[in-house]
Image (cartoon, one colour):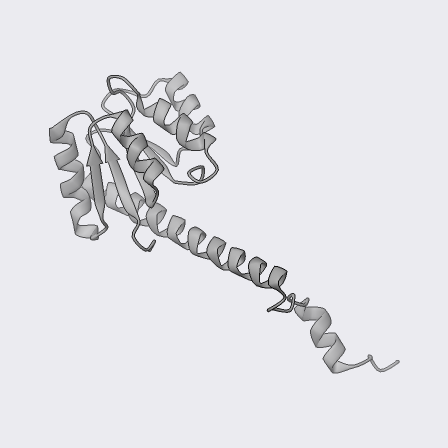
Length: 168
């Protein structure tokens, strides 16, 4: 799991926020809930968001607008997003959502078990991705500083240690 990361839940209806928080509570992940797109962007830009549950239709900045903005920034581009809608998803909305790289578009009310399963998978997978990226960045900085030797190809290393092949 991501250290200090939160799941951001965004919906303009308080009862829906409460239902989503209740459904996700058993997972034990830290949640931050906001009721509009502007507040969602503020939370996202502060960092440490590991997953976004986002209502599509909100007054002002819509869920798709938030998703577009998140995908434009390098530091937020890979955050998984689940779009939530209380209406049937039109082909145009679904196409726009998947073009933006959202993980899922779910119809409200969403089954709590299904939601927890999706959230657990996406949140933990994103945490693993970020952890591996930190390790890669650390290794690159060590290589630049000269404190670590570059990795060798294990197959060629085994062949080197084994010596030349006997002739047949």
